[in-house]
Structure formats: C-alpha cells, structure tokens
Image (cartoon, rainbow, N blue to C red):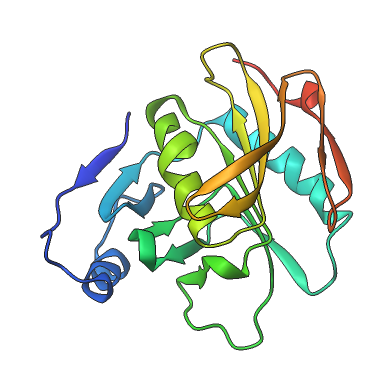
Amino acid sequence: MSALTVSQDPDQNWDDLVRYWEEMEWPEGSKVEIIEGIITVSPAPAFRHNVIAARIQRRLYSVIPEDWEIFQTLAIAVPSRLGMLIPDLVVAPVPEHPESDSHLPAALAELVVEVTSKSNAGHDRVSKPAAYATAGIPLYLLIDRWAPGGPTATLYGEPKGDVYRVLKAVKFGDLIELPEPFGLTIDTGEFPVD
C-alpha cells in the first residue's frame, strides 16, 4: 500500500487543517501527517523499518538527559510550512506544560530521525527536511533504505532557512557520529537491508 493524500480546501487556515487532522477518524494503524498543507495517510511502517528505528532509539537512550524523551508516534507542528509531521523518532525535552496532547512544537526537538519507506521516500528526502530546517531543529538523521545508490545514512545540521548542511553521509555498514549533545556513534552495519 502506498501513501494516500486527502484533498483540502486551499483557502483553509492552519487551525482548521489541524482540527480536521485531529478530529477525523483515520484508518487504524496508519500514519497521518500534514505535509505542505496536504493530509497524507501512509500505512504503518514495515518490520525492517521498525527494527532500524528501535536500534537507533536503544542507542539514544544511553546518552540523552533524564528530562528528555524519545517519541515514536508523536507529531511535531511546523505551521509556517503547513506541516504536522510524525518522524520515526523525535528527541526532545519533555515540556512541563505541553500546549497539546496531539503534538509538540517542532522547535522543541533536538533531533529527528526518519527511516524511508519505499512509497514515500520523497517526503523524507525533500519536504520533511525543509520543514525541520525551517523549525530550527538542530539535527536531522535520514536513514534512506531506498537511496538510488544503495542504502545510506545522512546526518544533516546547521539549518538556515529551509535548508540543512550535510554533516556526514555514509553507506550502510559504516559508522555515523551524532555530535554533542549526543556524542554517539551509530553502526549502520546493524541495520537490516531489504
């Protein structure tokens, strides 16, 4: 199953779009995001996809502060890009008084991780990094299982406007280092390959 988009009124404002996203009954188990103002419904991630996310999450727990958390299914809001995005992993301090139960402001995130799925890899490569950079998220780790030259891991940082700088790009099997505040080396050789 591939991603499905739900048409919206182009004149609909952000609050109405979020309300629709929050109140609509979506297919159980699906991942529902707003990407550039368009509601996108994707199937639940596959087994290997989840294994990769879980291995990264396990490693991150060893280095994050006690008042931070790693979220797997929590949306982050980027209203300026008309985005309500659900990364595979979001690392952020836990807010004392969250604005919403359904999402966090993207600016709170310290790191987002996306693992590509075949059906919507383009979002993880183009639309989402533009939104994450716009929000000022310091680090974006893209695990691209479907990269044209073979599986890769790319760490982006130093956001300016809607663009990140590539800090490091490796093929599966190589090491990739997350800088401080993480100070963590991830062995991409531990990731399953399709």
